[in-house]
Image (cartoon, rainbow, N blue to C red; front, side):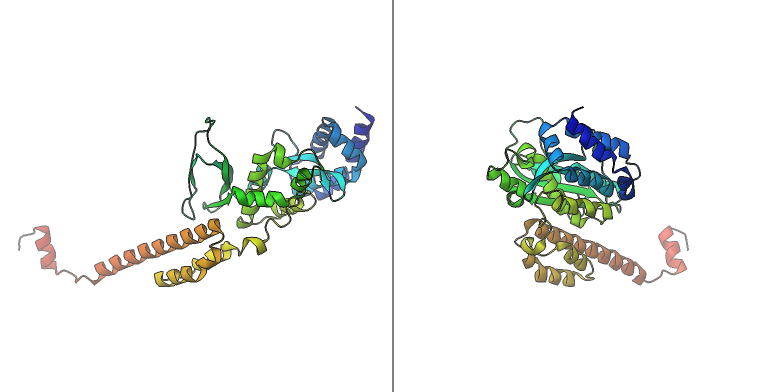
Length: 329
């Protein structure tokens, strides 16, 4: 073991008590995570040199593992320690993958199941109704699926409902272009960045980070997102700011579901749909939700009318009942 790695190993082992105080998931073991951290830094000379120059960033990254409750276990592919420029200096940051975010949401009970996928131009893709998963068809072995045109994440809630969030690739790249890592790469301040080496993963993570605001909230998930947007150095602090993206469709859908007549639901649609015209995905969600709500109200009304029709039919006399049954008078 090199002197630099020995130094960093000692720094990490010295924070065990702090790690245990911050630990949000008792299944995570300090000794294992410390070992994973040392392995990661020992396998990358550049990362080790940054860790040596900025030892405080390594300590903060390891502490964030405890606070968020996620693992560096390479088999799980949930999180990594990566060198990244943060402000005016290089640092070692805890980077959480899109799979790590979904695993965290499932582990904390926010959702039961999740899947994120890229959509290419030759794929078949159809968005389902508001509470149904999308239909995405493609040949996974094809070498001619075309360019990436979008991405989506679909989750199943504890109540059994499906929530789908879609993003056009142009919207993803708009967010990429605002990230510090990408700007540094374009300016040739750094030779590479995750948007270059792991573009597909970053596209999915961008979608997951937007989608999570529609999921039931948990403290650990909120902590993970906040970390990525700030200490993680991704430069995506405004990813969930609706000032640029427009109004949040979730409370509008909830209000639509409270209408009690078809006329009121239709009126609500006319009064609110214009606000989401520039947000195609949210506009589709609102449209599908109201259409489904109107259909359910119509079915309920038809069932109620049928029941009333039966109740209004005059009762038969005993003689009439005998006649229907073929009983001789």
